[in-house]
Length: 344
Image (cartoon, rainbow, N blue to C red; front, side):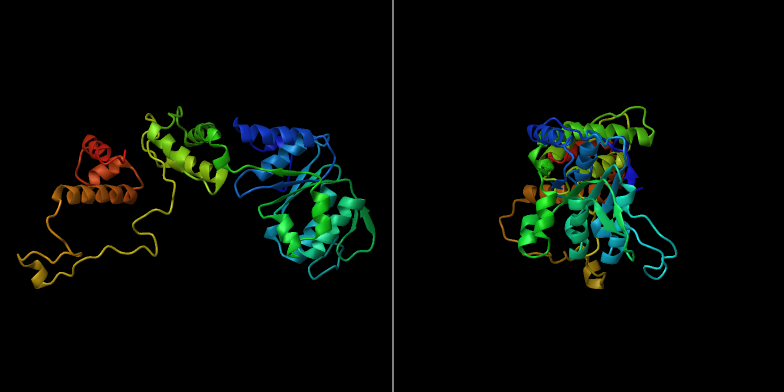
């Protein structure tokens, strides 16, 4: 769906100073019937900020219409935004309203606005300045009353200086600019967000209750840089719950990289020795790497054991009971060895 009321979207969650400052700015701008530019890294919640700007405005009960400018080609985006007349192009059998018309009286959210072509940017600028446009293939002027909110995850002033974005449109959109802070700037919100996402996923999984995260798992969440921001955190929390075998115990393992696997394409295969009569003889095999003596055997064995534990956990998606079975250990024995090597 591209038309929603702001109440249909999940709320913004947080309490850190950076988050509260963001909410204060949004509350000041929401009642003003002016364009707002929302910038920030991927996954920071720019669409949710747009929904809050709409929900706190006088247009709160009118549609919030959304379009991702990067998802459509130039011609399709122009038709999608402004509509078209019958016969405007092959396949245009009848007149079609664009999103500006559907947003009349409400708000239009242009996500990834930097991806729009110069021609589309010019028409958007005209709507913002004069409240009118023409459908594709038509000559009649269509008037609409729309508040435009736009979002970008690139530096638009730099794009404008490079000639890739219109300076005049940037000036109009940037009545004020809301910069959404990345998650690494609001680490105090990670625990709250993780608990919120965890409770929701536990309900979806049919668990009686959400057991929370172990201190080790929460420390892992708190120290991760989160390049994908809140979206990445949500995925990690939900994935951890799906992979956790015991809903009665706190979540003890979080897979931050879902691609981690010894069989990941492109991963260097483990070297194996070809079974030859020589290799099968009682003579010790040649080592894969040069050794020098004296050799710290305890350190070498400890390193080997730690590496084997890590590989086995990864191979069994960090399910410790499955890893214990694979290593012919009891669960308690595996837990003891993990603690010994600082892995659990």
